[in-house]
Image (cartoon, rainbow, N blue to C red):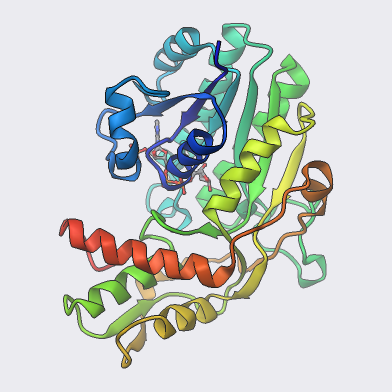
Length: 337
Ligand code: A2R
């Protein structure tokens, strides 16, 4: 019998790339959890497989509804769970702090409770924390190691501190096989347009087709970040659960290109067919406070699994811009944010 993986948040950027990765590189049966109104565009290439019951299956649930999770966990009895569902946008969390905390902390607790309740002690569970837990880090602590203190700087970051602690607690207290990752900035095709680099790429694609004036609106360009590719990230998540996994372990994982957000903007502008693009600061895009030194030390994860980044920063940027060029061709349900 084929082993089974459940992906929560399969319709999101990361979940959909993980689905592609597992489909192409393993023989796992892939079960995705989605909400009844989740857009399917990120998994459009898998619709035929889903319709034909060919390795990819969808289940409707909400991580805020424990009963829905118990039902699916009981039905699938997964070997692996990749828990990616979340309110994932730090900037948005200032506007909807309660939903962010509800979904990311209580939703994660619901997921773990469902597994504990059903006694699925052999299921390996990936808990997706975030580099944002480290928040405002002192310069002398860069690059950031696993034991750096938490200093969250948004409701999202606080919610991920909860996710992180709960994931590890269920390993210690109830012997569930959780592995926690704190991924630093990761991007690429399908990245939500509330994230700076994706918003830049989208605005450039709209400028190229003449749909908006040649002005890119920006927030904080000074924030220093290490960029990785989402496709390297999902490979890391799979490796985290399958290469010598140790219950309760936690890892910092991140990319290999460190720069200010402004450099990302310049790179994307340089890739554009439009040669005269202005830049304008939009104060609505600034966070009230920012986690602005997000640089990882990934040695612990690299030593344990052998994982390394494979995709070049330049290629990630090209793919992100091409994603938006294609995306605006297939639909016009798009704001210029
Ligand atoms: O909003 P939807 O319906 O499209 O589904 C999103 C899903 N999600 C939920 N699923 C079930 N119950 C909920 N209450 C719930 N709330 C949200 O999580 C979507 O499929 C996924 C999030 O996708 P993205 O916003 O594209 O995030 P991304 O970049 O894929 O992030 C994956 C993980 C998250 O834990 C982030 O916090 C972390 O990576 O950075």
